[in-house]
Image (cartoon, rainbow, N blue to C red; front, top):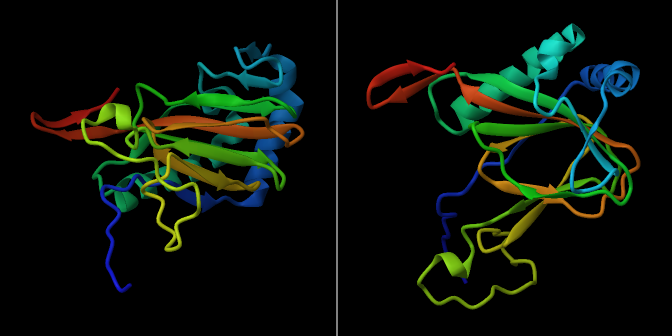
Length: 215
């Protein structure tokens, strides 16, 4: 049937491929410096998932990552200003490494005190994924009565009805998304899965009270 459907208020997930040399550099710094210098924080997910410097900013700690910082920041500015249509550029508030062994998982979560979050994938294989969850598609949050949508793929490729969307990721992929979106992955099947995650805030806010710098 001929028709027009608009994805109402879609949430942007932007994927940008990074230069492989920068990815190799970031992975080498992790292998040669970060893993040896830091005692990984062990969270509820168990020892298969470890976070390194997850309350800090690795770009401030390792000067060798400056070229990667500059490239990711340029990408973040593009996402925030050109894709999402805001006026001001971004700055990193946190950046940290994640290493996950087979059988590990990252429980669904969102990030607070930031505007845009992202992950750069440094070591992946064909099994590497990241799931995003549609909390707005929850009957408990609405007085309206809805049936559960079909589990089959929509024949037009629409995903607005889905409870979750799975994004395959490859080495060199940098993903950017609004920080409030829940994300995670179950039962990792990638040996030594390695990524670098980050949070960003705008450098200023175009607010009701005038342009305000963000510290």
